[in-house]
Length: 248
Image 1 (spheres, one colour):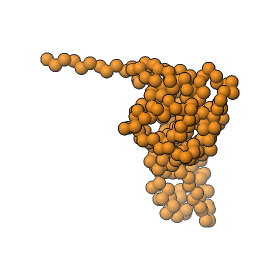
Image 2: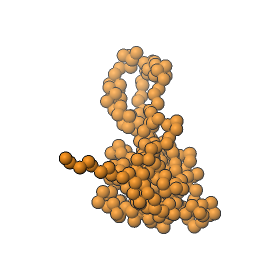
Image 3: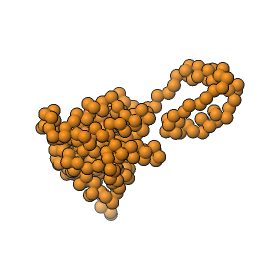
Image 4: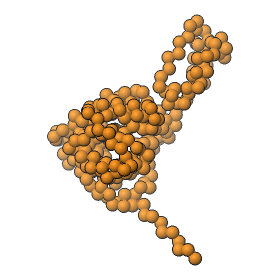
């Protein structure tokens, strides 16, 4: 009689940096755009340990890396991932993050941060990047406990890619990157109130739009990238070929 299979434990001892990078691999990420700095160095060292599974592209500037990650997301449909260090490295991501928010692009921006013990003391190259980006992200995290990382990473990708896609910021203090913990990879997400559902236009609003198009003498279609991300290209093409007089 064959011996019963031994269940693989769901926990293992890892550093915060390794937890973060392994989470990227588990989420199916294949490419990251990462510019290094002192506060993000542990994460870059972790990237080298997963170099066989994760390609790291070094941009010449953090903003270039963020826009490259955004372009990757636009062209592949997968979330783009960008790394930057604290302070000026993090603030160099702001324009691309805002653009991703306005254009509904799934983007995971991961920033290094000064150790938790000195946050708020104007430490060297410290900027409160979560507060800076509060209005231009779909969601954001300042990780203060390494045990939260598996959950945070799962939530970040879920939020970035569901409903109306958008950017999620993960701010990683350096001591959290270096801290070690037993990791529970099965930790559940905790997102009260967020279902990840795409909002639909009210039927009455659609009727009003159809009536306006029908009455237009020379209608013009001005469509955004949401048509592509919503897999509605065929429907838009059909609409463009349909005479306005046939609208009901």
